[in-house]
Length: 383
Ligand SMILES: *Cc1c(COP(=O)(O)O)cnc(C)c1O
Ligand code: SF4
Image 1: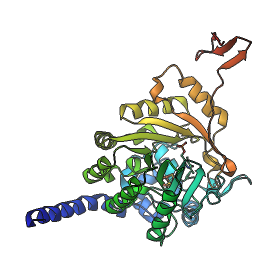
Image 2: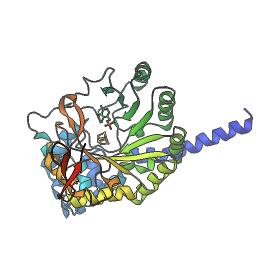
Image 3: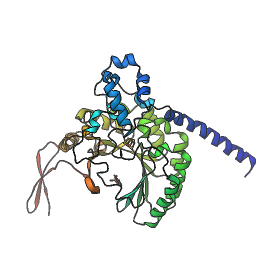
Image 4: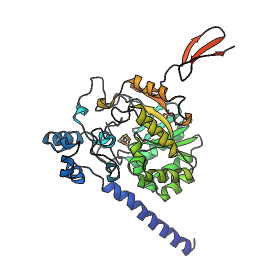
């Protein structure tokens, strides 16, 4: 290698580091304590707002108690989207600890989907025969109070990542029925470009892996993380799928638009999964607006999740029928590409199943009768 190339590489590394510093800085400056939260908005502003209860002693105790079970953390960028005058502000409702987290029905569990039982190696969930979910570490940019992995996400560190990495890759290499690897967590995009690239290099080498998928809420909570360097890496591993997690239209900002476009231009297929959350997005107009905007931003809605029976999340849960009715009301009246599948992840690790309104009416020997999306009757011949 000539010195010129070496010098070029050195400069590249340097600029990469500087660029990385900026999202790292956002992450380091995120709000993690009650005091910092109050300081960010200011006592006077909070007093006059719909969230004045935050200033009460009782609430501070609840906050600190819940913070010790599942941490509070939010980026300034994400908090900046909040509207303190709206008592049902969808940003704050997603991230503020609430006393209801201690009021679950008895059947709520820490791990209702039995992910730990379905992990042949710690932090690798192998529930379906053909795909595995790799829990990379505990960190996210923002901690969502409805998180289905509250039992481990946000927990203190000393995560044996390097040690587990080799074992996990070896497991995937040895199980030829695995077609897809899902990088998840905790948020996989909170690790460095170098570590991420190293994982992708190792997975790409495995001949039976058809698809690599990244599950990350970073595009919602810290879009600054989608840097040119990250996109350069993603492009090398074309075709990659990134499944992100927008729950409300206010989360779709001009910065998000720019970053999703960068991902798309670099060959990344961008999908979205939302959770159907009480008082946050469980009405038709909010959901319709979210789904339309996702399409406008270049993101294909993939799943809408019914809340899992996870301890500390009961206050977010809606009735199953509500989600079924929602999709029924959107069907036929909106572009088909914006409709997600409404899914339930069955307890005990039964896996995800789609649930929807049943358009079937009856079947005779040679005919089947259906409702159309307007609930008018139609027949098809079936012989
Ligand atoms: C959701 C999930 C997957 C992915 O399921 P898809 O239906 O392919 O999106 C894989 N493994 C586990 C453990 C999951 O929970
Ligand atoms: S970003 Fe995902 S993993 Fe992290 S707290 Fe939110 S829902 Fe849980």
